[in-house]
Picture 1: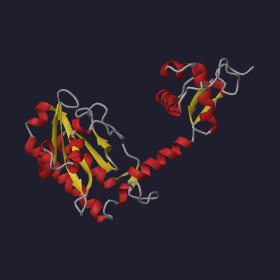
Picture 2: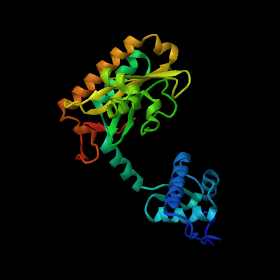
Picture 3: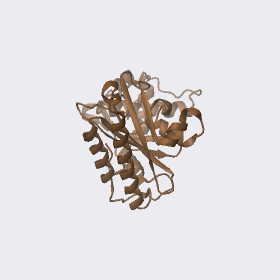
Picture 4: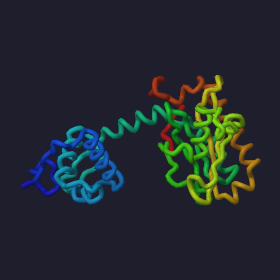
Length: 267
């Protein structure tokens, strides 16, 4: 008889409700992948506990993920682990939005100069997406602001740069559009402030933005210094993209991808 967590074995009560929507199935499948990833591997019962999914559903979707190489089943441990196809997806993503080493170096230098957490975000389609961060014990990043973050643009300085580019005539964004610098104070995280500067290509198109964050008291007292450092860093980052093919290394959708020697895995 197969082990309890063997996806090849019978699954008591297994059925697919007629009312289960396609979007619901996708959501459940992704929840299983996230549960396995967050634990570094998990049994079916652990997945069910962490996702709230019925055990028969976990078995059914896990089997489908194994068949597609998105999960593997470690039989001797009765555990599921991430499959090899996910690596292909990760490589493709980083080819599209990989951060060139010189840009990483600029963001890290900004952190060291101001002793504040530093960020680089790119304009990707209809979003502004964080693709690189540089922080440390004395300058931790804002909560949840990490690689791939793209939520709540109205509440972050990075997002306000993007919104000001989209709506420069709106009163709340007019100053940002004119100066190229945005601030937020406690809107995303109480007690912390963030400032960002626009990075633009030679045509004036928005490439992205660089930003720093820190405690209100520390960053507020150094507003002039912070804005000067942000603007200088934004100019150097923009100069890099201009000198290397005008945003070619951003690998935005529709641009060639793959094999770029300047791009590496983001942090």
